[in-house]
Amino acid sequence: MPALMLRPWQQRALTTLQAHPHPDFLAVATPGAGKTTFALAAISRELLQRPAPAVVVAPTAHLKVQWADAAARLGLHLNPAWQTGEPFGADMHGIVTTYQQVASAAGELRARSAGGVVVLDEIHHAGDDRAWGDGVATAFADTRRRIGLSGTPFRSDTQAIPFVRYDLDEAMPDVEYGYADALADGVVRPVYFPRVEGDMEWVSPDGSHHAASFADELDRTLSAQRLRTALSLDGEWLPAVLTRANQSLMRLRQHQADAGGLAITMDTEHARGVARILRERCGVEAVVTTSEDPDASAKIGAFAGSSAPWIVAVRMVSEGVDIPRLRVGVFATNTSTELFFRQAVGRLVRVTPETRGQRSMMFLPDDPRLRAHALGIAEARRHLLRRREDDGAEAEEVEDPLAGLVADGEQISLFQAVASTATTDTEEPEWFDTSAFPQSDQVGVPLELLPPPTPGGVVHAIDEGASGPAPRHLTKTQMRQRNADLARVLARRAGLNHRSVNAELNKQSGISRISDATVADLERRLAVGEKWLARL
Image (cartoon, rainbow, N blue to C red):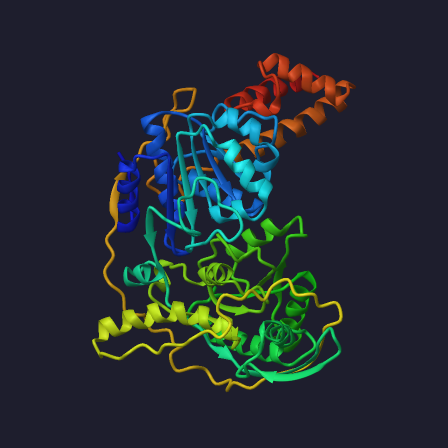
């Protein structure tokens, strides 16, 4: 039987899950550590013990497809195109949906997922909207196993998230695998944070004039305004930082030709402005993705598989998206919570065989709150180096003067950025080279997996090849399109309307609805249609 090679932490997590006496299980693992593989292996094990529906809930539509494709490589077939009112699919093991969809179809999902297993990816999103949390609680009340995933520890500052155990307001994971652990295992890349100082000048909404650098101590409101000024498209701080980041990326691309850069921006207008700066100042074209763009998922997928230099995003590439070739980032957003920051940095830590152990970098405004977030990650990296070099150096303790304050959501209708300049030396830091970062040996632990059979009795064993089996959801999409094209030709040749043609094809092939059809059903329907066409 073919085997899936698991990282040691994944094997430990599966063992813990298997012995877990309760239906609810929370795994917190640093971005890039392999939460998806752990969760899919867990689904396979659960379905081996008892065949039942499987559901994965993802934060965004793009991640639905990413999950379905990853599952297919393990022989699990999940439908990312499921819609309310449709069955999960007789030849599918389950579906991938979003928290928003769950909220609108909670009752239906409760009936369809009863006795099954659900994976709640980035489960903290269930607390983003009360309806989302209520929907999750209703939809999966009757599932026998609920596996929550998160890329970083989280709190419940407003309402408790369903199926999560708390100590006061802190979520309590059943398995935790942090950045320091992953770095020591060679599972993720070390990330460095060039923090860029600056001199900013702005007019507050009340009309008062201010000038400050990031070194100046300000209250919460003025600190937020200073950060927005630095990130303004009209100043010189942002163009200077983008230029420096692009220089670093171009240097990297001399050794890794497809190395990519990510700029995380504030909103759609800001994203387009950042792309314009990269084009006009640096001579490079950037892919822009925003939640308003219906083609955003396709653009992200195309960028991941290309060698294009830059992608500019508004939140969309901050969480869960897997683009391992990203090596340089620019944190150009005023969203400054630690959870968002760590998820954003997580886009730069994913390892490829060709670049295992090499460094990545995220350029930051030297804002006190962002500085504190970065130092928390950097300390784990420094601790590992100290341990390996055994030099006995003491860690520098830095207190965040704005700890616990949230700078988001400020009313800025009358706010005006006047000027901003970057003042940090723009020479390449000595630490940013292409030599491999020290790492420990990592040995995968084999896990024998045999996903459950489909209703037709076909067993999907894991493909030992690199690409794995073709995602069934793609096969079905392509076959539905072929059926639709054939129906149009038949309608034209036979002089009938499309409804009559489709009804006849369904009748002759034994299908009630195309949305319910299996791959075998669709193949049979094509054969019926082709015979009909041959007689015309």
